[in-house]
Length: 505
Ligand code: AHR
Image 1 (tube, rainbow, N blue to C red):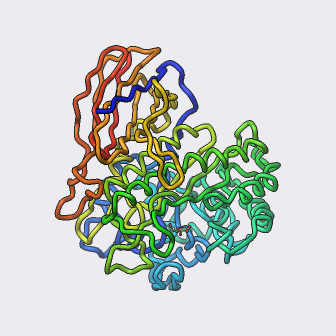
Image 2: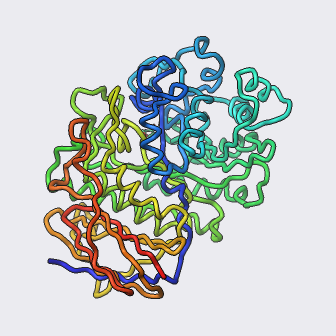
Image 3: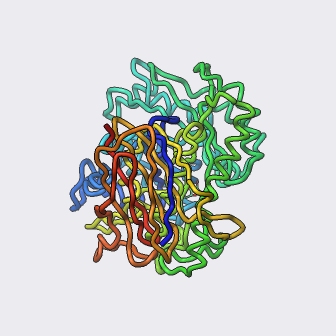
């Protein structure tokens, strides 16, 4: 059996891993909002003001830090005024991006902010640049955040909400290079300056403005934004300043026409999936390097506000609804991403997996009366201890990690990261080898271990997944770890994810 030794200096804390790297995303797409979160006030399913109680309860287990809404592509055809006021009077529209279905606007601004309150999550709203106006976006910010007397504050009050909400995270359009308007980087960058100027800070609500960023390896987009917006990233809260630029990257096994099944995949597709997931490291490094040129002090954050696996939809489901199952392989995609996120915590300010319920790499899959926690859900839960902890570097000893050449990349068979907070260290370990166990020795320096607990997420097959009939086929279980004051030894089953929590003296 392979044994890998990793050295960790417990007394050398690095940058803080923002809890916002564990953010989520809910779009008006398929059964994410309608059926997933929102059942309406007349539903038989238990709900609070129309929002499903079982879904909220499950997500509260994850300490969801923020929730992005209303899209995605939907954001750039969404007109917020259609989704406020008495529900019976709200106009309908056609959701042309996602299934060409009629959207009745039952779930709008007030419902979203209520959902965030129920989750205890910060709202992240993405405004409409593609088909909206500067005035419309400025009005939305005023409607949400202005106290006192103003036309939008009065409109909000007339809809039953006296006090303004606190809304910090604000996106200036989505995928403006594609579904958000098919713009060139140069054109979007100038537009973003204009839109951001009129997104005001009302009554002490300081916006964190996020410019719509690149698709995967479109480095020209990032460079153009940094050149054009860099002078507004002054950290001085000047009018129209930017705090962050975004990035979207999905893990697709095949090509966009034939992405591959979520549950029925070959050994080769397993490897390709994980190698492509591990490619996030290179993307974060390269986009970060461009940003460093214009912003060496790292005041402008990188926000990966869409990431995750994108497989073929489940047979028999609406192709426009992006409903896919979620296996142990997806869980490893998530754990590998988080290891990279932790390594880039000094630039990466936020990340949002796509999407929270019933869409793409979801946390939860629902039926009208059941909620299934996916393997990916469990990775988020097991990694909660990294929220706002200080990153710790992890160094392999005895040469480079064992690896495999896949898809033009060298994929290490072990992925790891660590952090420390409040006298506890958390180490995350992923054994990507589907055929063999791996033993990991942690060589711990600069601290003294008083206790160690292990948890493992494993199954006989990488394609194992949870269903209504078998909701715990993949679930975390406690595992024995050998520990001493300065070290830990743990054996990881094939294709598994594990965490080790260390109590420090
Ligand atoms: O998450 C699904 C879609 O993927 C989003 O709407 C869009 O932004 C991206 O292309």
